Amino acid sequence: MAIQNYAEHGAFAPRKIVETLRTTSDELARSLGIGKDAIQRKDRIASDRTQRRLRQMVEILNKVEPRFGSALLAYAWYRSEPLSGFSGHTAMQLVQANRADDVLTYIDAVDAGVHA
Image 1 (tube, rainbow, N blue to C red):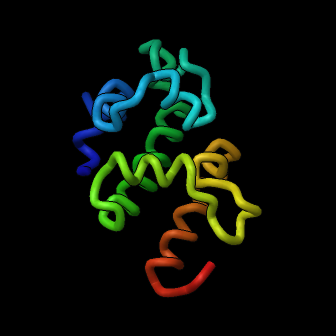
Image 2 (cartoon, rainbow, N blue to C red):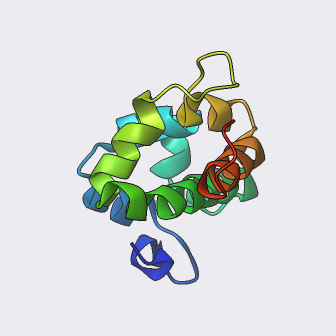
């Protein structure tokens, strides 16, 4: 999915992400490791921390979506598939622990044929 489909007025819009992924704002907040207020209140949505977490998740989903064929399946992978080399943690758990860059590096390595 194109990044602009997740954005509104130059920022990531949780409402659009929720609609695309057919989930709830509570579930999205849990997936990001932030409180639901962070994606429901306008002042909190605009915060650097909230926008960074939304960006990280969207970047990860966009990298793996071609592999799975849809944003929904990419989101399911993000939430539930343990990544080898990360003690069984999922991409979601790593993002929650501020390790999104590790997930992106992992995806790039797998895409390059390196088995992580």
